[in-house]
Amino acid sequence: MSTPLLAFQNIAFRYQPRNGQVLRQLALEIEAGTVTAILGPNGVGKTTLLHLALGWLKPESGQVFLDGKPLGSYSRHELGQWMGLVPQSEHMPFDYSVLEYVLLGRTPYLKPLEMPGEQDCLIAQQALDQVGLGGLERRAITKLSGGERQLVLLARALAQRPKLLLLDEPTSHLDLSNKSRLLGLIQKLVGQGVTILLTTHEPEVAATIATHLVLMERGHIYHTGPLDQVLTTERLTVTYGVPVQVVGLGKRRVILWG
Amino acid sequence: MFLSPDRLASDQLAQRLVLNLRLPRVLAAALLGMSLASAGSVLQMMFGNPLVEPGFLGVSQGAAFGAAVSIILLGNSAWLVQSSAIVFAFVGLALSYLIARRARFGGMVLRLVLAGIAISALFSAGVGVLKYLADPLRQLPDLTYWLLGALSSITWAHVRAILPLVVVGLVVMYLMRWRLNLLSLDDATAFSLGIAPGRERTILLVAAVAATSAVISVSGIVGWVGLIVPHFARRLFGVDTRYNLPASMLMGGLFTVACDDLARTLLAGELPLGVLTALLGALFFIGLMVTQNVRVQR
Image (cartoon, rainbow over all chains, first blue to last red):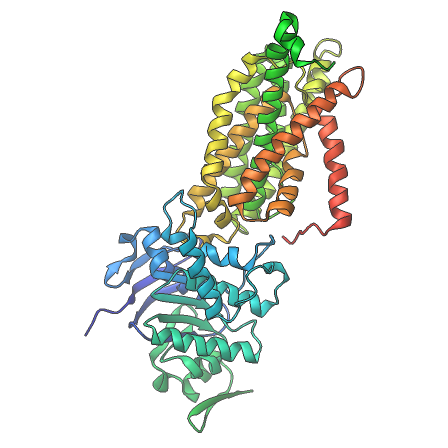
């Protein structure tokens, strides 16, 4: 079997020495070319897991491997070229133009004191076109709708040309049309060889695009595997602690609750 | 008051006046404005808050306390007042930073802001005590004048003394101006874009405080330049610090030189520069508030 693109080995993590562990004994492998969705109630450590994958948080014990090598053996710039992060939301206090903001995604390719050049602008422009915001380059980001902002954050991560894209609740601010556009875009990225790891509160989102599913419970993984094996009535019910039903509808699966 | 260039060429007294009195003063005003405005731009980006100014984080009040300690307790010699002001400006920064590190809530930025407010208040209480202790005839006027901010007694010796620190601070801020954009983001996001937010923030903070504390050690507290100029630079040249930072430097230098000229010539006696910048700065700010929204979210 090939080396997984990303592997968590026996990860334990806590935010403060005196606080309890947020994650414990966590192990997970993510194969290249897959779309893995992390599902679970609020506060189980989904975002923490993404930040550990990024190398921003360091585990208390255990190790994270990227392409077979420990995260610590990569430089920050290399990590920035490997992985892009789309945060759940971002505080935007200044009136950057959309293009300027997306251009920040080129930083991993710049030397410490280098400024982005024409090529970088071109790539930022392409990223904007990719997410369907071409034409809004000069618009101030503070004047965008919540959904458009989320797409700008995605464009910034795409300007990094990442091999692994980490998405934290990517659909939380999107209306139906933007949501389906985003899911289509994710499928296209996978076609281009990008591996996707995302967290979501919406089992439907996972059911639509994920190839693999990770169900999390307080600090550890309750179940993980290919979508069909994990997205079941019984497992979702245990994960969320309320009655959930997975119903097949043609080729799609619909999740009912309550 | 105004010299013709002819006279400058022939008149030795005029030459000496321009070269020994005016020139160092203009240069000091330019350095003061450049430092305050670029440090203001750096802090505003870093704190994601357009209402922050370089005196923040206990720096101005620390410098004021340092100057007061020197004027009242250590003796009122120029170099002593200056070094004491610079040292205490850094003490202010260091204390704010240490307290922020120890706090157990929120993000680093919020903790720094709160720690800065507390440290500033402590130092300003200290200045109050020293004022109360000061000899009202000898020491109090000196201290009050320093606190108002002025460039009237600047000499080449002053300029030479502060130049290294100011130049290093300005050059570091200028060179790191692209990275500064990324420091306005969340730390985790900045990290995902390949930078080391903690380390780069510290370098820029030290550069900003070095330049600021050096200039205010000879000028005293000159407010509002660092708050208002980056706003105008943003309005004219955009937010991107690639352009905003050099623009702030240039506009800050011009604004302060102009203010200092006005302070010198407006009335028969001299106005303290800090009074004039506060007056003009606050008026501009009100102008900004009523003509365009000043964005404050955090």
